Image (tube, rainbow, N blue to C red; front, side, top):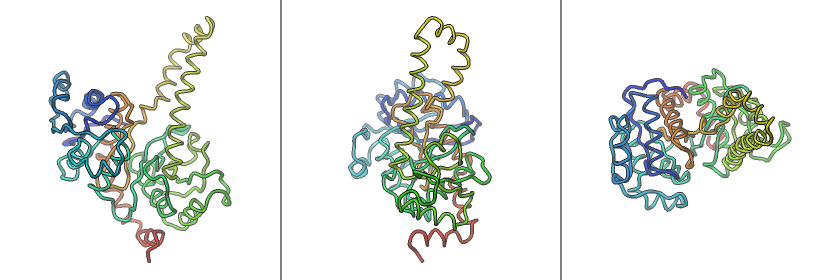
Length: 354
C-alpha cells in the first residue's frame, strides 16, 4: 500500500479489538499517521485505557478523538450473541460512525465473525450482492493477486461464487490497477470435469457472463503463489485454510533458515555474507505486509486486521482502508455494475431470478 496523502479522511478504529489492544491499535495508528498526514482518527473504546497511551503519542493525539465505551467484543464471542448484545461495544460503535457518515471507514482487529455480522447488519450489502466476502492480497511470483472469500462464508453456492468473481475483478481494477483482471475458480484440478457441483456450475455461469475481467477457468493451489490469475475465487472454508497455510509456510521457511544458519560456523559466515539478501527475503515474505482484509459487498468500507498483528501490521491494514476510500472502491463497484448493461439480468438469473 502506498502512503499518499488523503485530504479530509476520517477513520474509525475499534481500539479494543485485537490481542494486544488498545496499545497495538494506537501504535499502528501513529505509524499510519506518518504515512498519511491528512488522515484523522476516531478511537472507539475505554477512555481510561486509551487516554494515557494517546498522551504518549503527540502526533496521533493531534489528529484523534476518543469515543468512550467500556464494552468490547471478545475473541470467542459468537457472532449472533455479539450482534444481539453488543450494541454498545467498541466494534459496533465504530461501525455506526461509518453508517452515520461521521467516518469514512472502519478498521478492526477484533472478532472476525462478529465484525462481519455487525457490519452486514448496520451497513447492509450493495445491490445485487447476497453475502459480503473477505478479500485480501496474496504475494505471487508476478506481484500481487487478490483472493476471496477468506472466511466469511464457510458454505457457498454457485450464486455466491459468481458474485465474488464480479467483486474480485472490480477490486483488481480499482486497487491492483489491472485493466482486465484474470479470474480463476479454485479447484482440485484445472480440468473441466474435476471438482464438486458448486464450482462446476459457477464456472458454467461465469463463462457465459460479461465480466469486468477475463475468466480463466479453474486454478489449483499451486497457481496461487505462481500468480496464474489476478483474482482467485473460492468459498470461505477453503480460502481461510489456504490463507493460514500460506502464513504457516512462510513462518516455517523463516524458522528453517534461522536454524540452518546457526547450524555451524561456516553457515553463520554464509549468512553474514548474504545478510542483506535474506533481510529483503524476510521483508518480502512478512505477512504483516499483506495485513488488512476488506469485506467486499458492503455499503461502507470495513477492513479487518489480523487479531495477532503488531503495530506495523495494523498500520498496513489502515493503509488498505485509505487506498480503498481514496480509490472510491464502492463507487467503482456501482459504476461497473451499471456499465456492464445486462449484467444485472445475468446476476439475477444466476441468483434464481427471472
